[in-house]
Length: 215
Image (cartoon, rainbow, N blue to C red; front, side):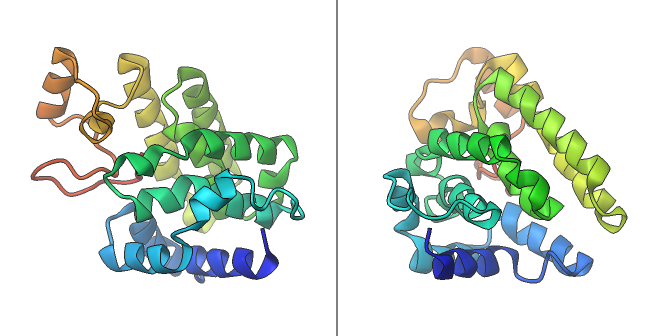
């Protein structure tokens, strides 16, 4: 991916979060909440980036840690903002897992700030696959250990959500809250689970506000 575009995406996504704990907590609410203004900014500037990255448009670019992170953001996070609550929000997930796996194989996650590394790991948490969920839990628990002390509360919440995602996949083999968006029929057990306040993560179920982080 072109250096200028990588830098612009990084600045748009992280702001000053890597250097300021207060900014990191504020930015986490933007990352994992539902901010229409933020979604609109991302759509206007980076709306064509997920399909371009998935199509291999930047495969020949230098694969430094920040470039690897940008590729993952483009395939995992941008679609969840730009195409929120539509099937396209999840259409790039397989590519995101592949990009994240490549980043881990290269050790890029260990060269990044822990906040950046969290976004390298999120594709595994978003996967409807139990082995990947186990991996996500391991990665986020390890990340909590090496995270800055001043941000331990934030990284503890990341690990907690990894466990919660794992629990849903362990029980259902998929995320029931995605069923309506993806046109999947819910089982009676899934309907009962959702009706009783089951996890919706970053989706917007009827009558509820989104929770952290998006799945």
